[in-house]
Length: 387
Image (cartoon, rainbow, N blue to C red; front, side, top):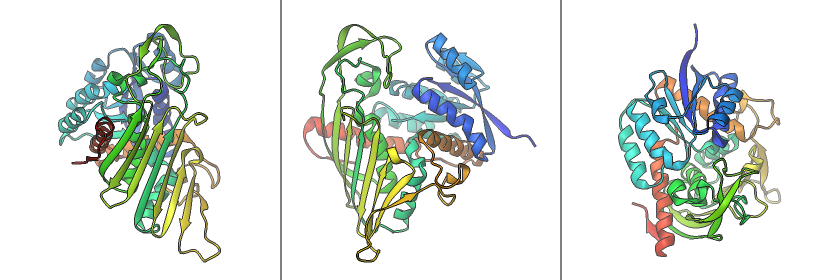
């Protein structure tokens, strides 16, 4: 019996477009999902690089109008790899058209947008997913299991940090990530959104926030049309423009369970390429995760014998760890791109089984409430209670 197929229409084709394409392609090679994805059409504004992208990754067609893509009867899944300012319009159109939605984070530019996106989805029989891919690291899944089993006891502290350096050069051009109208916020939304998702997943809901934010560089050279974050040869045109988002954010929180947390996000951490870490401290033990060593989890157990206590390194590569059995023999590590494969496989299986996948748009709304509360706290200099 032939496997059921579903056609994907993807909007966006740069960094996330590559990661998503690889995820769809590899999902069928390593996981036994009941649905096979078909890379049907990819959408973008620049014809020549879009065509090159489609040829490289095996997309059957290219299209320049995302509204026309969504309207097509032969498209089952809309993959949104486009910037945040497009998420709202695309999600509303896709939901109304009855398409399943696989979307990059953060969900929207504001709580108001996010709430409407959730309302429009309502009870429609569609699967919607917000791609916080780090939930799908085997080591993070191990952390979740240890917490759920009570192995670290009552949680007292969460310390999250997401540090990058790519904006520290004052000559780096004014890409869309530095414009409030396009990105909503700077690293607070871009990077802290990942940390908030993991904190909600591992520790619990957040009850109150207090934040401070700053902008180190007020103006930057204007970019050419092809410039994007992480580009090593981003073009620059004449003139400068104003940076309208923060360059760094620091937020402290109290969780509903009484734990205290901190979130540190910046694009000015010189020497840090993509340092995403968390530390969780509890009454019986502690956990430490570092994305740059993503196959490992550091675990401290108070129940160890005196004189033998210390953080142990657990390699989450054995078949007993979630997702690991689909890949290589123990000790043969996986990487960043594999988290997108896991997300694609889980998404396809959720459609097949008519179940939900997490995080989804409801999680995205809660995340936007926390992010927006942080922005309000920084602007008003006071603690914000999460309603």
